[in-house]
Amino acid sequence: MNICYAKGQMCFLPLKRIISIYHIVYYSTICMLFWCFSQDSNGYNINVTLASASLQPFTHQQWQKDQESSIDKERKRAVTIHVSDEDGNMIEGARIIVDQTNRDFLFGSAISKNILGNLPYQKWFLERFNAAVFEDEIKWCETEPEQGSVNYTIPDLMLDFVRANQITVRGHNVFWEDPMHIPSWVQNLTGGALYSAVKSRIQSLMTHYKNQFVHWDVSNEMLHFDFYEQQLGQNASLEMFKLAHETDPLAWLFMNDFNVVEMCGDLNSSVGGYVGRMKELEEGGVTMDGVGLEGHFTIPNPPLIRGVLDQLAALNLPIWLTEVDISNTLDQDTQGKYLEVVLREVYSHPSVNGIMLWTALDPNGCYQMCLTDPSFQNLPAGDVVDNLLLKEWSTGVVNGQSDEDGTFSFDGFLGEYMVNVDFGNRTSNSTFFISKGDETTHYSIQL
Ligand SMILES: *[C@@H]1O[C@H](CO)[C@@H](O)[C@H](O)[C@H]1NC(C)=O
Ligand SMILES: *[C@@H]1O[C@H](CO)[C@@H](O)[C@H](O)[C@H]1NC(C)=O
Ligand SMILES: *[C@@H]1O[C@H](CO)[C@@H](O)[C@H](O)[C@H]1NC(C)=O
Ligand SMILES: *[C@@H]1O[C@H](CO)[C@@H](O)[C@H](O)[C@H]1NC(C)=O
Ligand SMILES: *[C@@H]1O[C@H](CO)[C@@H](O)[C@H](O)[C@H]1NC(C)=O
Ligand SMILES: *[C@@H]1O[C@H](CO)[C@@H](O)[C@H](O)[C@H]1NC(C)=O
Ligand SMILES: *[C@@H]1O[C@H](CO)[C@@H](O)[C@H](O)[C@H]1NC(C)=O
Image (cartoon, rainbow, N blue to C red):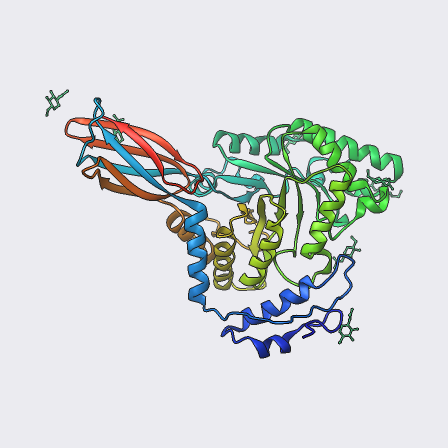
């Protein structure tokens, strides 16, 4: 069966005949999957022939069950607490209270300078997130609007805030290939003058912030735009990555782009295109440390998301969703509904190591999607985040008693815990960490 007939053509009908998945979004997605993945790296169309296709229909319930069992396996671990006295005798009937105080999984949001001095915003942020990215504040247009006017005052203050609160922070971005987001004085430069401006941008920014950001988006959206390549030659991005790595060697280098996981049909950001660009950089001597996928969705398609993540997982690198939101062409209820679809799919994928929402709250609102109104009352998308992050994907407080073997077992999300054990007039408070692993982890407490 030929699935794709001509460049740009969807393969709706053939698949519609062979599978009977009840939900239209799903079958059209699977259809588009073939369309997407049948582009070769030059963007030409090739025909895929299926000799013997066997596609299983599934229901929403089955899909969700699959996500849940993956979350149990990837994000949680079984723990057994052993309670004994100072002579090592097991204690039965001790009262145990376990409380998760920190989540291991990095889940955060973009923040803007609007958070500085804004205590309600800071409180709201810290109650939810353990990771952040600055929306605009270290972009070249912001730090050096005119040549020589370099000023890091505002991002320095934002960094003080994240440091004071143990928030992990991504570095976004050193360069942005889109001319719309390049300072106009830089756009006026050519040749040697541009090259030396590029070098001093890297040296200035990345020396100032050495060891502060966990990741750097070095050449943002290079699958879609190529300002620096146009001006400086085809190795411009490669040079940027090399210099970036030399300047801040411990930070992880990322490519960051849109429409890889969001949709089919953007030829610039097919999985093949992404991986191909990565391989090119590798041949030039630069290795990426992770895979950055922006995640600016309109209508998300879970099977497409999973298909893309599965393919990228073969690279054996951590995958980060770096800018997740849902388009403001949809109403707020729909934004919330689709955000939930995206979060469940990406959080359940074993290769995803972090999720950043693109929901910085500015005086004029948010880029596409806000989680709250200006007084921090949840919008539908905020309810989704709170229900998942603070409830479903947190262990919270677990109460129990040690059994006749002096043990108490529970399943906990990875992260840091406080445990309080009481028996008669004896009491103990301690902390422990559940780290990733398949086997049950054991923790002993002596009263
Ligand atoms: C794909 O199949 C169509 C229809 O059979 C054919 O016309 C076309 O030449 C094929 N393209 C390639 C690249 O093989
Ligand atoms: C740097 O930026 C800060 C904050 O906008 C401003 O107060 C300060 O005057 C600037 N410094 C210089 C030297 O322009
Ligand atoms: C860019 O160059 C043009 C032409 O030389 C000049 O008029 C303009 O002021 C320059 N813009 C900047 C931001 O330097
Ligand atoms: C794809 O990338 C090329 C070069 O980087 C650019 O000229 C083109 O406009 C891009 N296409 C899309 C759809 O973004
Ligand atoms: C680009 O870099 C590669 C790898 O270092 C090198 O082989 C190639 O000659 C360079 N191309 C140009 C145009 O400088
Ligand atoms: C704790 O209780 C035990 C037995 O119930 C008693 O022997 C002991 O003196 C108590 N210890 C303290 C510090 O009150
Ligand atoms: C132990 O933790 C509990 C619950 O958090 C607290 O009420 C108690 O004061 C703590 N006891 C000690 C000795 O720190």
